[in-house]
Length: 226
Image (cartoon, rainbow, N blue to C red; front, side, top):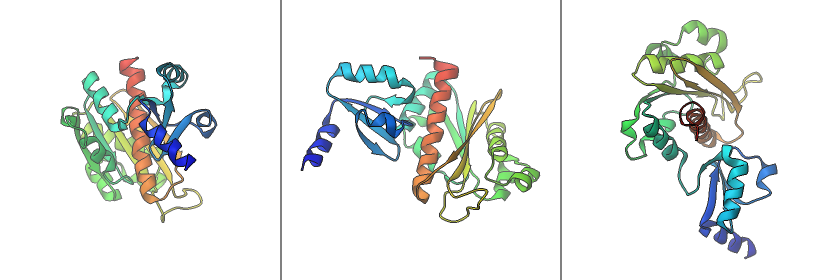
């Protein structure tokens, strides 16, 4: 009963911050509710909320029950940048989340869902030599997917995801959950490696959440500087 009441109180609190990427060590200092997309922090007063925001600003993406894709679409509208995506293991989930946001057509050009290696080569011009040498799940192929999405569209920025969602397909060298996510522009491409720990659909969702958060941080650093 106590747990139930606490949870109910947290859900109804008007003072909240929606975060992504906070460690358990940090979260233990706050009333919070964890979910696969991050953690919601709850406060008793506006002052407590503002103080926490100053400490955790890097990890905060909303102060309401707003989804990451809504935040990113708003930021793209603010910057005037056009986005294209290239997805393998996420299977179009990233683009589905983006197009769920009303008005996303103003900033989102489309997605290449290239599950098979043949399509990576045919649609994104990923070289067969890269696929043979490094494998589809690699930083090199992720980078090439980013570049291909830019070259095949009029996008200003691209996101690429390639990984092993599971439960099959993993090896000792490349275990289930290994995921590479990239952000690309005409002037730079950055790729990050992640080892996800969930079940198949959890890994797929988490890969898109990480990708959106990477884009959020990239836009803040390069274009918005709030």
